[in-house]
Image (tube, rainbow over all chains, first blue to last red; front, top):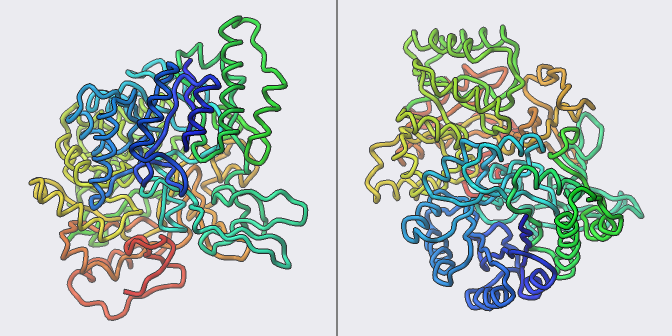
Length: 331
Length: 294
């Protein structure tokens, strides 16, 4: 299986390339990609350097243009596709049907992947994207159980890439508007979920409070570890009971599933986290590289090493990990 | 301009569904969307029974369509979808690209529902060519954005070939998950949910720790706690070329809302009846939960 790693900057890209990534995915410095955070991503010229660095080391570069174009901003999405095609990127990762349609009509030879934001969760939906836009690969949303991934893999007309590690979206990607409901910006429209410019931290008598556009997301007692106020991971109230109504702060870690994923014929595993530091990328890439290599060397004897788990939980959100939807019990 | 009744997003008992639609027959609603769009475990009515109900409603002159699921995760769900798409009596609202695929393969006309992610005129054109005769705008888009999309459709020369529908009233469908939040709230695993959604005919309200109403849990679906209400924007929508306003079913008061949306097309509304739990921010490109006075 191919190891696909994130990079939000050139140092992160180098960390990925130097630590065992088979491919690195990046985005441009605007709302055309789903990690549109300030200080992150690549200008046109920088993408070229990224590509050169990756190429000399035999690593592929993918570019994500995976938000949904609104009519007034079409030029940006078109330009993003044009630049990616012009520099001959190894794959363009898209979600918007208008963008896919443009890309396949204008650049028939461009290798297109369906982004996780395209919400392709079943074989018929993937067939739609394959027949109409000639996609070669799809990234599956983090909503399928392992058994369901196997079902899709059996019938899928394209190669599949699944999430292996990183922040856990608990909603079907591309179909979640919770962020715009609170802030007017969502992953689909702006490439941001719970955007940082809406976040406010406040020390109060009741404890440390995190707010998103003034809405109280969580309140921490003294000594309690506080996390970024991603709104689906806040503590809310149902009938007077306060809890993590939707999900706890936690990261996805599927390293133990490597044998299953290989058996299903999954083509690639994806590491989430273009917004994370080069150190994160280095840690996660090298750990997953070791795991994949160890599996390849002797599949029968494959066992998750405790040092891998330790290394990964150090960089996990909430310092705990889960199998997420892959495990039926999580659902 | 027509008024439609969206699919019931909640899980109601069979009798409750039958009673509800008998009432709806007495209203001036023009279009009715039927069927389960949220969770495949909700089987108070089988696909065959939904179809029968649809035929019965259609016999009274209403336009009736079957709505398909928004999130299909299992092969069994795709198989139910095939049955829905193969039916020979009612047209289908596609709420996932899988439905678009099955319907376009058969060259059947269909509606692109609100979760098919049509954010621009180019996407809309692809769908129109595939067989969409109507589309419902994603709920998070604004009136200004809709205007641009419709202008784009005009420039691209297909605006006369597709109808536009806007989700205009009800709890907004905001997200879908593999996880069932109703079962989680009741400390049950999803595989043994005991159909607890039946206990919450209008969902489970989630508030912030400051008692601000935020979300409404409906099984695997997360909705807005506030009720979206574009009654005050009907004239604007009409001027812009919107063909249909959609009312999303609630347990109480649907008839009254349908009547008001019907009336709003022919009169200037001086007073918008609003409770304090309404919102319309999305229409104004603001946070969806905001309410902007018109």
